[in-house]
Picture 1: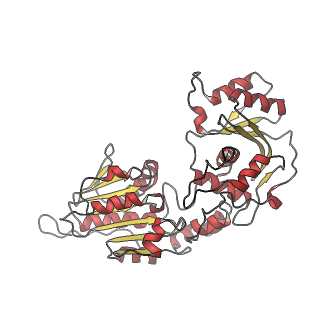
Picture 2: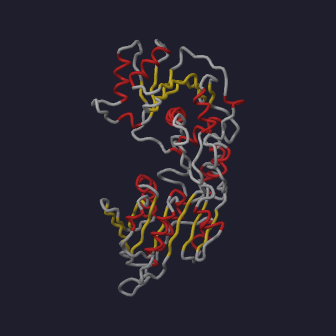
Picture 3: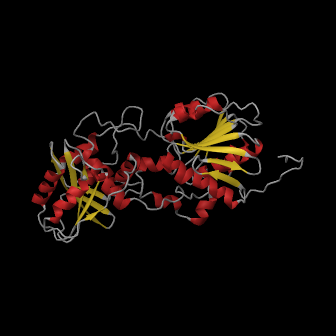
Length: 433
């Protein structure tokens, strides 16, 4: 690019793109996409394309978006700042406004969550880029398309990166019926030599965390109807049901879904990486205290200890001026249970995370069963067999049967706390290339 005084600014970026990344950057389409599995370099492609466009459009404005503010803050913005810092690119960041200015070009970049797409109206843009497009609405994308109209821009471009999520609007627009002016690069697994050099068994290690279909989508980057029909597709009575007995020396794990009607909870134990569900408690129009009383009547003096799990909403103050978990804590102080533990998140995991982990425990991509259920747990079994997604969506249909989802939700909170991979390879706050 040309400096203001007429000289030429030459930059050397520490970036050797993979073949799919190179094709993505070379595309001259007005709107282009990079579709790939975990570890395919999507984050790096997003950041590098954004930096490139700030230098092609000096002094102009661009936008980098993510589906939600937490994702924007914890992943997208973090990755972008790491790339800038590692290459010595000078910038100023207004943290309150989330506006970054590139000092070499005076180009401004707005960082925005796009879940409220109506707020995207306004200033003309020279370019925009979206992270994880398949978790963004088509309306948000179209709103940004309408803002791509800076008459002073030298290179107008809208781009996005994503992991496949079935035959959704992104698949329709970019792949099946590619709209005029669009282009897409589909990255393949095992292409990213940087990941495999550092973690040779990268893909194999993910097999235990995902069920078979989800592994094909997330790790192999395939477009599948993963979300169609039954939510807990890995469940089979023949492999997941077993007559189980209580181990009096192991901790009891009690997971609750705080729902007035029915008040639902499951009782389980964990041995190494195996979770066994021993019992379920379902009470119609019951209070938290009544749920505690029923649990205590069934398990009055378990010597192995007790751990409580559940919905993060149970930490909210009730009209009585206390929380559900405080009620549970106060109840067990009056019993023989000693040192009851609470493993409750400050915020609930996403439905997608919970469902993925439960399916993987039921039957993983490496064909292992790590979740067994006693046949007496008829409500939980009904959840596994009957809970469905709404048509053409990734939203669980909770209206189909008011009795369904509560027990599987409770189990999901427990499994997410106990069994999730604490650091995911490749896709984390500091992603690999």
